Length: 314
Image (tube, rainbow, N blue to C red; front, side, top):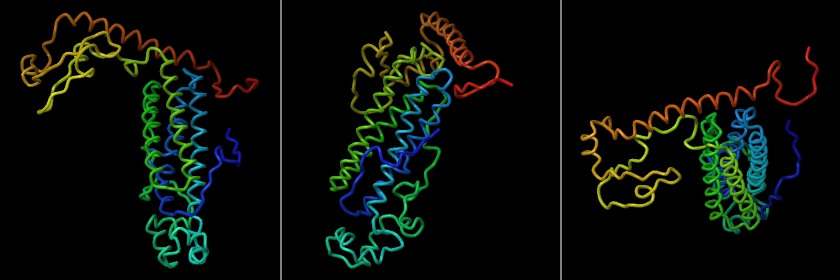
């Protein structure tokens, strides 16, 4: 159940209209890395987490709801930045407030032109309103959402989503000198950092969580680093020394072509790994049973009920 509180989570303000920046800010309203995409992603992921991970369901729903509140902040800011860009635009252009955007340099036709160049849909389609489209006018799309049904995979997707959203806010802050708008953007950017740490903590709370999903990695092909590019060769913790958290050493394949030929397309591998492969396959069966039982045991018997209302069975 949602209950809308009309006061914004953060007191969004603008000092003057700026239709050009309003268009840029649409990226965080209806864009791929925007607040609507984040809200729908976490909201969607929450359903699959409800039974096996009720605590993570609670977290995802809380964060999804906060993202909706951030969407409201972005939408309100865009609307305030568009003050004068509506069906009354020609009249509004005569007023001092909209003239300040141009520092008194342009005629009202010039101001109208700039507003519409920023985003023709503001004046032609939406009449000065906000719509779920990005800064290029492309409609919001459900393909922006990453929800894979495995919570460890979803949480890793969320870490990337929050990282991208933070970066977009950083870039947006470079294109406005309005102190009030920057204040709102800074708040929204910082909440992306907070959400990142929440998702990170939730992922670490699920053990085991690597590799993602259920099946383990084939030990015959886990350690190889193939040097597949010409020119200067670099070595680092990604291709030499111990693999992070794996207790194994990287195997650096300096000449991949020769290695593939010698191993007949990687079909002839170290026999010492056969025992480890058998152990991995055994572990796969055990983990599959555990994951399956985890969901099965969390499902209620009899009448299914999402909430905890006290209802007499009929």
